[in-house]
Amino acid sequence: MKKKLFCWGDGSPTREFLYVEDVAEGILLATEKYNKPEPVNIGAGFEISIKNLVELTAELTCFNGNIIWDTTKPNGQPRRCLDVSKAKKEFGFGAKTNFKEGLKKTIDWYLKNE
Image (cartoon, rainbow, N blue to C red):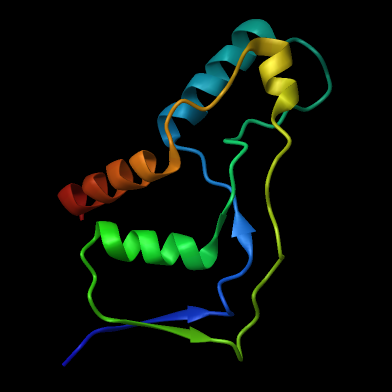
């Protein structure tokens, strides 16, 4: 029997993800170099569609089942991507880990620790 993965919506919304080591570096830089009351976004400045995320995750995990998009379920917010220019300007933060590399590291960690 072939495996199935059910995903909500049509996969068109986009999201931003930041690798945990980059998050830690951003927080450290902010605590060392930023002392203002205004908030600063720490993010990757890169967004990926949920559809592309699911396809890439399937590829990296060697999932060969069927991906089924349930369009009777909501997509959620169409877009989520941060403006990270202030973090770059104020304390020199920029994500170093590209998305695919970070996802692969996360999957590898999960498989070792499940």
